Image 1 (tube, rainbow, N blue to C red):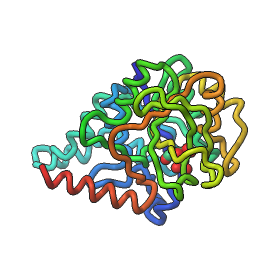
Image 2 (tube, rainbow, N blue to C red):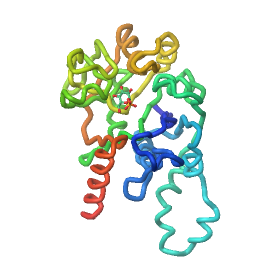
Image 3 (cartoon, protein in one colour):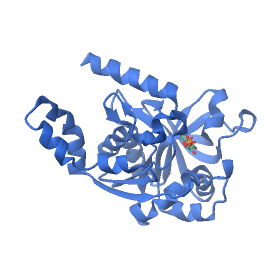
Length: 276
Ligand code: G1P
């Protein structure tokens, strides 16, 4: 039912300089797979077939990655290395990739709005922030869990998790009432509050299911934190007019936008690979 997934991927990735000077942060690998591939695989598992990527200057490596590389494939044909390309080959054969550019960094809300031309205004769609790497060792991926919840509630859904108080300033923070185990109806959302004004320690992480009404909300949202158009503020408006759900997902989330989280993810997936 949710066939399109939007990947905002226009950011500079300054925390990984100099590596990201000439390479998109979404292409940094966890073991041998770029971060964005983990996101695309999660979206595929959730039933998405169209991957819509918001790129920017210096991000052509992403477009090339999700395309066939004839020369390379010809070179390794018949060798054991061929199987290393099987995963990405399957993705290219199964999914359609669409792209548009965000020309100026005006915030996540603006990036998502740029995606309107790709996802259209008729159907709900998913959003994955690839530097939040999510993995559920015990079963279904986070986006799939959210798609199931969407089938029940048919409204915008954000994935949430508890964070330590000293970290609330890094996230969109929600306030809400529990309606079933792990499911909250959101009454308020604040982008990157300081500890004193944070309504809770429930942080939004980079997984969203949005209904097309969000585009209207973004149109009337004023620039917020850091002068940027925040999706958190648009969703807060949506929450006041209708229903927005916060879902405490099952599984792990690695903050691969930070060096610590990136190393943690690398170690985790390396240990997991060794077991097989
Ligand atoms: C964005 C959102 C924020 C959310 C976070 C999750 O912030 O604006 O609400 O909590 O992603 O990773 P960013 O980390 O891009 O600054």
